[in-house]
Length: 230
Ligand SMILES: [Zn+2]
Image 1 (cartoon, rainbow, N blue to C red):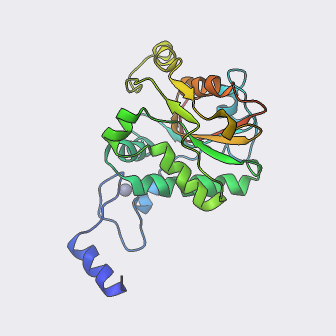
Image 2: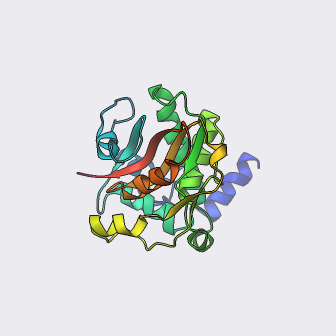
């Protein structure tokens, strides 16, 4: 598409920011600069023993873990996640995945990852949403880190309710035994990066870890786009 046609399209059908809804300026993509500046970075990725690692260590086998942004009720990160999950904005998911990939690559702590594995959605929810946001995050990471994405080994076989309004104990019960391994041989001896959009209590990732524990010599690291603020 040539530049003239692109600017004509932009004038006729202006794109808006996925977080605040303001019209995007030239050079902005999906999220305006003002909202980008409000995404609270955790600065975890370069450091071990960060909050995400402490939250998951001892509850599942874990090599390294990180989360990029702090998720709080009403903050810009929450608006971003909302746009990714409920507004059908698949392009935004891939863009955020690319951001994750850049940070993981820069840290050097995730260099020996072999495979990217998204936390799976139940097929019914995936059909409703049209995509799995965590799988699209993996696609974005893959564009930067050149690692394959595996969506067939781990599946969610139980339909669970959205967890956003549940207490910690209910969340744990909700996702217990929700995941199954379908092709364990594809993961044997690999170091996988388990990817999700939001980390709250860790119940979902721990449940994935339990299903994955059947795989021999598997190493698991975790990356989430956001983590609930303490
Ligand atoms: Zn904005």
